[in-house]
Structures are given as structure tokens and as C-alpha cells.
Image 1 (cartoon, rainbow, N blue to C red):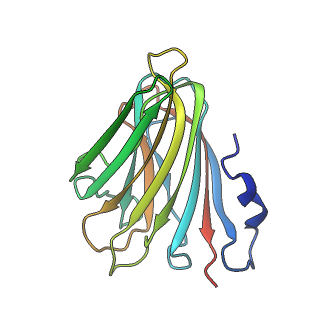
Image 2: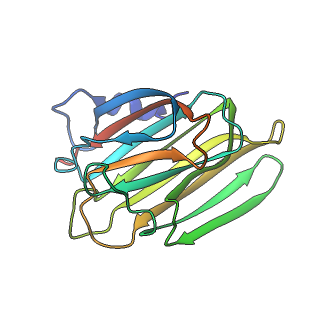
Image 3: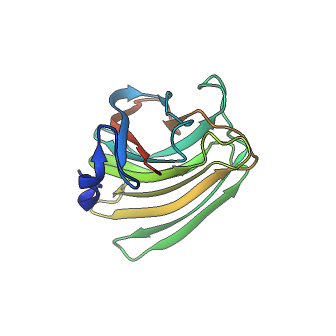
Length: 191
């Protein structure tokens, strides 16, 4: 799965022109109840781009994103808000909105990744203590329990206060069997 498409030509290993994506890190995970992403170079990049692919056997999970200001020791759930729209191949469309979300920012809801699933998004202002941190996301996958019903979701979320975010995590609403797949994080060059 390659959500980058034509943008792939802008991915670099460093020393890039404005608008190029520089790989910060990529990793795989298997059976994880949380994927913590640290060392995000928030002091170098105002905008980050991420890709996430789920490849394991997950039935009816919801994947959340949560921010941390202390390297992953604690998280901001409860101080986050999100809104997103969901569209399905059976013609169903819904919206999900939550202010003060206790779980985090909803990234993929009712994921059945036996068929695979993936998403991507942009983080904004993560290292800026004078601004809110934001994420916008897009994902597509098979909806759990519904044979051949695909779901696309797009939306975003934010911290509800100004604070410098220096790490984040992806995690499912249920710990077992955990999540399996891979991610990549890029910095968007600004000058």
C-alpha cells in the first residue's frame, strides 16, 4: 500500500528543498497494544507527515492517536478534541465528534484489518509551546463485521491547550490481540 503516490518524488534523505519530505523514522510493530513514536524532531519541523498500515488480524478495533509533552511518560487524552466524517461503500455516511475525548483522537473506527487497512495524515505545531497541536487524517479499510463494505474516514483533532508535544502514540481500544503493521514519519521541509 503506497498512500504517497506522486509525492514520493519529494521524499529525501536530507538536505531537501522546501516542500520535500524527509524521513525521520519508520518501523514495524506486531501484537502491540501501543505504538509510541518519540524522537520526532519537533524542534526541526513545524509540519510532520505520517503513514500507517495495519496488516495483522484485527477484528472490530478503533485506533486512536494521543499526544505527549514528556516523551511518552504521560498523555493528553481528556485534553484532546476531534471531528471526522465516515463514508462507506454501502452508501452510509456518518460524522463522529468529541470534545475532551478521554480516549484520544479517533483515527480509524471499527477496523477489520484481516483485509488490510491504511491511513496517513499531517501533524502541525507539535513542538510549539505557544500553539495548539493539530492532526488531520485520512484512512481506508474494511469495516468490521461487514463483508466487502469498505470505509473511508477523514477528519482531524487537536490539543485543547497550547503546549509543546514531543511524542505521540497510536493505540487500539482493546489491548489484545494488539495491532500489527508499519508506520513512517516524515518532516516537511520549510526552507
